[in-house]
Length: 432
Ligand code: AMP
View 1 (cartoon, rainbow, N blue to C red):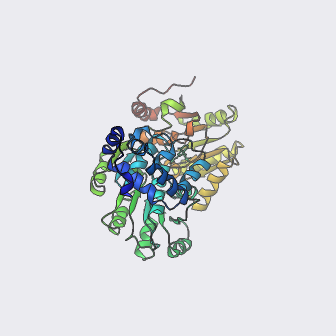
View 2: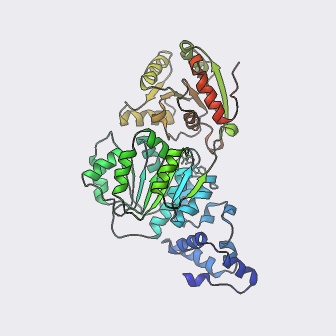
């Protein structure tokens, strides 16, 4: 293969080949290792044509199409079928780094396209270097079952034309099907830390062939107290591996862990695609605590809000609000940590299908939910942590559509509102 990147004759092309970075060379090598016959052919054509060197030496920022990453046709087809026309900023920056095999620390929220930013290059690497053994080679750790299911769905659709097999591992459900899936042999595992640790201790899973570890929503995993479980899982991985760490924010705690677990990582920080200022209309209603429920019911019913995701701070508060809205004649479901996995999945599916008009959720339950085209998010109570406001409204204004974030703020929440406004860098307009 190296022979095909021989210096061409013209001086312009020679200059181009001199500036070929290891990263770009790695992209080319990836392309040539692709198992798809069509891709082999196209890579061959690239290598023979004179513009190849100039093409290869283009700065990465000029990438504006998925095919510029030299992903194999099976992946490009899946991307096309999903209707992705161009890569998002996190994908433009992360895909080449992951393809290269480098460690990565990325600040990116849900809604930025971060899942495909790691799934696409990891699938490319898996299929480019097939192994005979069927021990998992990629491990994705996520904080919640919902996010695990979502990440797994993303992998499944992106890998639909590839012979890659994955297993989904999370608690709250019977371990048997997971054990069966793992014993059958898989290439990748998407897991929440607790249940994975159970499987590890029961020797159901062998993590000694992991090539890449992805820590998704690392900040939330810390918040949820998974640090010890993660440390124990990492101890079972090979020392030499690729590490990708995604986090909505990069507080000092995350940077410290990154220094421990990551080796010379590329650091990427992208503004959320659904940047609050751009796509979401924010409104605040100042209202007494006792007036929140009647106001919400009025906004939904009289304001003709077709569907809304409503956030409460506590599980108990979520249940109580759901009951009251139900009495108002609305179709409602609540999701929080005390609900069984089945109930949470059902509620989410009912909501996605439009059978439920209001979904009441706590922050942890709603973390990472992928609900497209959701026009309204309501903060029935403001979150304790200002960053959670951004996570919450990340459910609306997705994929370029506009959304509305309504906050019902009582007197005792004014400090929280100020902290949120400070984070956003602007005041939120008060509704008349
Ligand atoms: P994520 O940030 O991974 O949760 O992705 C948020 C949503 O964006 C998901 O519904 C993805 O299917 C979608 N998405 C990811 N990449 C793209 C893209 N390049 N173009 C359009 N939508 C995308």
